[in-house]
Length: 268
Ligand code: IPD
Ligand code: CA
Ligand code: CA
Image (tube, rainbow, N blue to C red; front, side, top):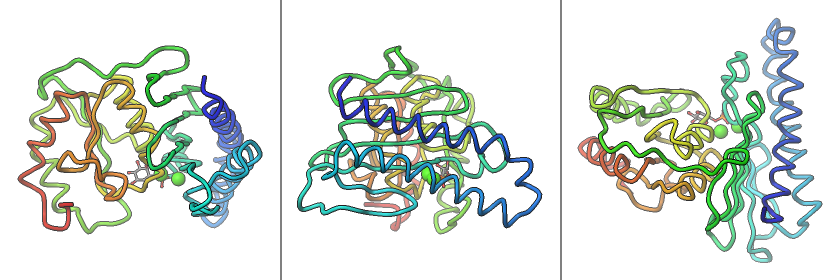
């Protein structure tokens, strides 16, 4: 394993330990909404701090982009940036719905090079290094081989915080839904993308994601032989936050169904 990936895996497991520990006390904390909210930010923050500490201990000059604490480090002085979501799927976590993950990616000179998505509930560790493939624990991952959308299970994420694209999204959903064998909204974008890499879903799309939701999952998919793009299939997805992914055949078919529903605001 690449040494930088080894550190990222250690950090993800450390964060996973914090999340698992906190998950045991969810019931108690559900009693009070304030405590409940504080609790979550505590978990998010504690997991993120643990990750950052571990990464910076090993690589003090690297820069960081993390969901809770934002950007740190001087990008002019380092070619490396870690992109971190310490707990992806907070709403699920709050409800004890066991579908959430830790996501850590490394960008080198603007190119994703290392990726970890860790599901602490199931202890599934998804990893990828650029040019060296994607793995689930010790097993090499390949995207699915399905060629017809009609046979496919497609993952997605519904808007739930920000609704500016909800009409366009629902038009896409309405058009995609009857053409597939099923749609899933599991609730952790990073894990959803890992599932595409693992062939558990044949494709995925979502609007309005942040870089830390996507970065690691995207490298997993491309290293597993899949494709990732924005809503027009281009490479700007980390910037736009709008993403389509899938095995190569299904990626193209999803883009075709989505195309008529692109509003001006959704185009690059
Ligand atoms: C969210 C999850 C969810 C997606 C949201 C994200 P968070 O991340 O990935 O699946 O639909 O857009 O914000 O807030 O739980 O880290
Ligand atoms: Ca997230
Ligand atoms: Ca998060």
